[in-house]
Length: 106
Image 1: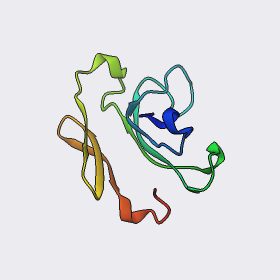
Image 2: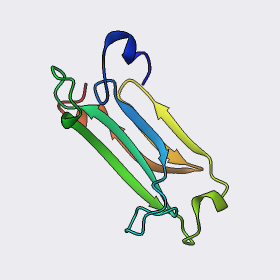
Image 3: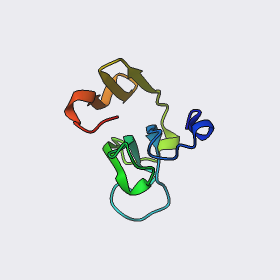
Image 4: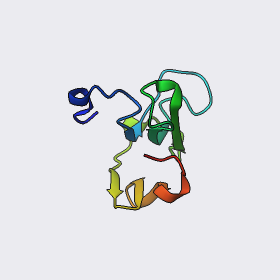
């Protein structure tokens, strides 16, 4: 992510924001092509470089009619300010993320 490799940093230390993640092909609830996932990942222990410290907040959105995501015309977006990250699609907010809600957020 970003230029983390230039500083020998690894995931999740450098963080990750999934504006749209589709976990398709599974037959489990919320893990099919009918669901969009929005997720913010970070390292909960800034003094370590191990992915075991991955913390995240996530929201799942099902298509209203149960159709596949690729059958819908959706615009996914992110707004990032100094205090908030908001993720959504079309005119809907999917995941509001306020930095101060997470005491170990880096």
